[in-house]
Length: 434
Image 1 (cartoon, helix red, strand yellow):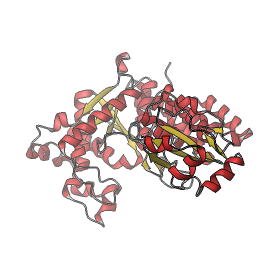
Image 2: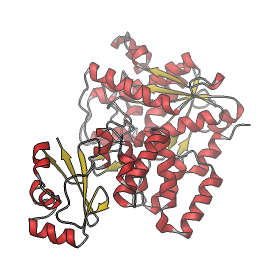
Image 3: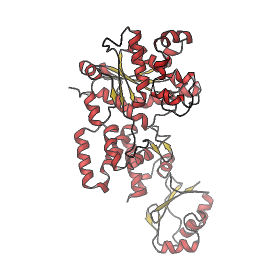
Image 4: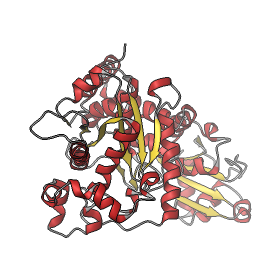
């Protein structure tokens, strides 16, 4: 017995709006729904993850999900609630981005589970041979300019200016829905709340092309949206100090990804657990109660970071991220970093001050005092005298082990034969020997 999809969204706080009849349709039979993802980058980010979770829950509730990669619409760019028109991307860039997104979506959805197996489609496949005149006859004829201008996403851009290209975007997305309705049996389009105007344009094209009327109840196609995820203070969610938090490990390392969730505020974590994890209501309630009893242990954040990091990356990536966090902020030892790739090690120490020195300069140091005062150019200690006093005061660590002898020889084990972690009190400094 599958869960009720709408009820699942309600308790998770993931239901913003839906057309009348949507819940009845989903209760009646297995339904096919889609969400579109425009390939404006080679990776999706955690803002997209909220809508990916819609498709995931949809499939878990026994329905059939379709993920659309917008090879055609990506050539134009969605104007919805954007302050300015996007720059056009080349076809080569779009194809590269599409492939990256296709691989990422494959991680979340089951493409081999019988009748409700997920599918991936690309709207370029049905738009590539579509002439402009054909499109005007097939889609443009069915919507008035008044209808298109009434959409909030368009209204907000009229003040600053909107090109005909972007103005026509809702027609393209609307026709996607119609094409999938006719060819793939799609009855529902879902998306973020900012997509309501584009989605209902699709239901309207279907209604008019299929001969429905506003006076007669017409339930051929449906729309559903999820709230945009914001922080408790109302600001945008999904950005770190360095920008978007991406799902691609080469753009946001698993360590940085894990840290993003681990640093979530208590006020945000209640909702983030519901939106971004697959934990049950009972599991989340138990986590929240445990957290409330000992907030300093950050139990909500740890559960959130574990679930999302494991599903987006892997359990191994999660394990490395936890070990790295212990090294930087806890009592972990650098042994956990042995064998990690250079990329992983550098991602762990992103934000930690770093000094690159030649192997000759490193080996020329007679002792630890030389190393931390001379070779690091005063970035750890300003002078040899200051370095010597700090070492004698037990204030320096090398690879997390205290060094108290100013004349300690340079016989330390370099991580990957090139990295040395110097600790000055609670502050870390990475020495890179090349």
